[in-house]
Length: 485
Image (cartoon, rainbow, N blue to C red; front, side, top):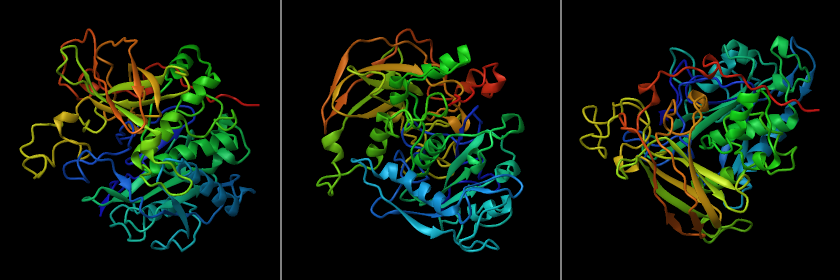
């Protein structure tokens, strides 16, 4: 068993943080599609780290309330109601007809050290104990990092987030704790929800922001997507770019429908369920189905992935048509409803993206400290054949392809793709060619960028061009959550 996060930094590393007002940089790198991909010495190289879906994923739930007003004020959301909401949010993912995934609520939290069985996580010390992240101590076998439980914790009044030094805008985060280093199967993961956003107090000047129940549930359905191994996606990013330019988010129903639940920013559009939309967009359902596909013969109530989806597969190249280009966001849009029905992938999503990573290892299949395993990021394949490669699962239909840069602010905990920070797309691509997708078939489609400059150390980080600066240090306007009435 391998810990997914280092001691003393669980809330910084291995987290997937979702913010309502701005993006908080962390040190984790996310792959577009899967959250984490195995490397030469961590899991199976080039294969996403996922749960064993031959059995239900067992999670345990905090014994306290989800939300309580500050200073011991009244409980707003009691524990039974909180548990019911958690169960419902996990069920959104398992309900996808083409997904082979199930969950089980295994009961209350396990005892860890002085933290009691079925206890209420009330303090930073409680959180660190259950997470298994106590400085100077090996993880308790019952903790998340110890592989003993997958906890869903409630910070009822936001005091734990304050104690961790997080800004008041942080709604919560999910984290993967332990995995099998040989098989790459996730053993345990966790999440913590900030109940301050549900305490019916809306006082932004005092750092107390309020979300509707639909917005809050959407945020944690997103986080539970990370819990099961799904990374961020970028579609309809122009909604964000226009909001930065004008200071006012404007989002049509089509924009909202096509923007993935796994988009890194919350609040640009009305909550999906409030708008009468499914909680999962086309991209979300396609990718979770690809990661956990239903196979034939399907069980009752399910549909085989190969009967419902086809795949576009290819490589993005520089203008020479030979050199693969890493970190380019590729979007396939259905010609009949391009804003609503779209899915995406980042080129090279299975390849490692850490600065300094070499692909000239002596033997990637059998790494040693003298060859590959100690070079750069341990996650992501070192196989150069995967540089610039992309795959996009899609329902049958006719599609066009577009390429774009991953938004420069999507870094750290908001990363999209394996490059952190992202790079600008090195060239243009404009084509009206259509691609027909048939269920159960893979269609090859390579993309050659036009007018690319001489490449820098290809497939590496944009920090070679300019050191990363947080979004709020670049003079870009922070995006306030759309106010609802």
